[in-house]
Image (tube, rainbow, N blue to C red):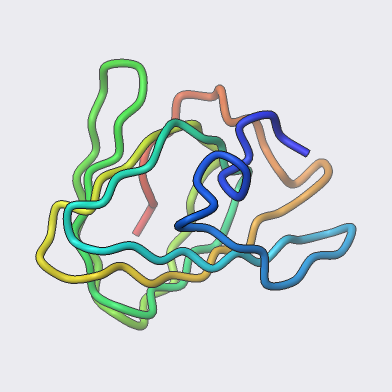
Length: 114
């Protein structure tokens, strides 16, 4: 388990839905104005269940994004904190990869690749 596992650092927003030796499936929920503390994600696929706007921050850098509901995006391994900067709740599913496919969260990536 990652030291900065979002399920441990931000349990009010993240919960594990299912897990095996290859993937972990997380649900993420927040409300407008909510923020998270710094945490890490391995390489993941994020599926947006709601439209949302948010800003991710790491190491003095910021990445702002708006995504529609029903979109699947690649989230490279990364460490960040986030803030819901929109006016609606966020609801997403993350499928996190494990093992060699997990990547390195210290690689400097920030935000999803759409």
